[in-house]
Image 1: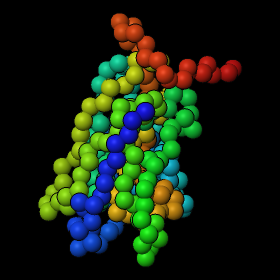
Image 2: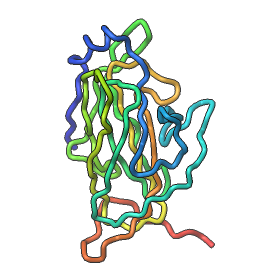
Image 3: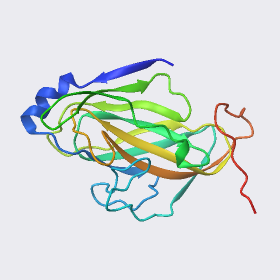
Length: 209
């Protein structure tokens, strides 16, 4: 598997001049599995949000999709920070989700400071898309949501977990969450019978009676 690396050197001057703060984002589409506040909290803990003091309240939202089709992804960054986003999918349990992006760091007065992160290229299951919405310019006015379409694998899944994470450059290590913020959505995937099934994904387990 090949990887490319996002370097934060180009944003260091911007961050130094303005002061580094925690980034925040809201998952707008598909609907988040947790009820999010105006900043998108709680979102620090992996793999799907929450924090040390607030594990969040479930929204009970389920998004129905057809396998092999495109799913619209829409996130709103509510507090700016340079970085990028990644999308992954778990078929049976959130424990199938990948670890947070591997991060290279440098020493700082605040401890380890994020410099770069690995991006899968091409993405491999359980990652669907990586290196989305790379950005390093602080906005000067209202910020439009980041939007794109991602292909959902053609599989059968009653309660898949779609994970969207934001990796942050030039950031101190958070407890919890490290250099990554997390949101998830529950998907119900019906395979398209006119397309071949995608391989490389776990088989859906049959619920026991």
